[in-house]
Image (cartoon, rainbow, N blue to C red):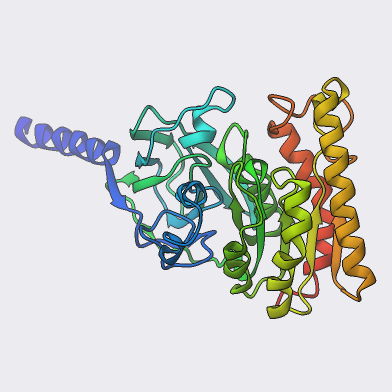
Length: 360
């Protein structure tokens, strides 16, 4: 009798231990959203390999940041964890480590993406339990990758007694993605966590794939990026290069950049976005003048395109982009989460009207 009782207790203990154990699975087989082209040097980067010897080295390096990339999977685990290797172990003095090189987990609830928790990094090699103590029910997940670093290896951890598999639900919809080009702000600087970059916010709101081609300090109208964008059957193109490009660069290349896209997509809407009226322009007269000159230039360019018969183009003004309390940036320029929410709110009506007839 004692032996039987001991065996039962031992089996229970072993079962509890099995449930507590986390098994890590390579993420390489799960769908990865946000890539404009699959022919990259490694899986977790944004620019195709053929551009390595074509584009400027800083642009190529930034293409290895995983901004806007998101992994989709399904599991009934009570725990979700992750192991990942950051490519460069980047650190910045104005963005959290979670935003720079962390992860962000969302679950699909009634066809809406709901924040679960973040995977907080500890260095170059990272292991984090993102969520635990859940009911063992099947859920659809989306894991946003780091905004300002790359990832060389990624594994998802679940209970040893649970399954992890391909998503059953095709959300966000991947046909007719929205393709966005821009600066450090578009890349996600300085969201506290990856899910709060405005392209990721909008991806969840519209449940449609957004492709983030934000290159910090390097949205300089490189024509090879226009060629890359033009290969996508997009529902909408968003051009948000004004924070980086000078007036001279805009005058020289903005119309040519647009024309490369337009020649392949004569009817697809294109949104141009003005330079934000940065919060410190109230005090910094040089920056205030620079913003004014840039916005005057982009307005003239868009007006000239319209005067020459271009349809389905719009310029999104920046006057109300950040609100008027001057509390939406971390350094006068780069957005906080509040700034990104306000930016997403500003863009939503234009995006909605542009893609409603371009969904299929």
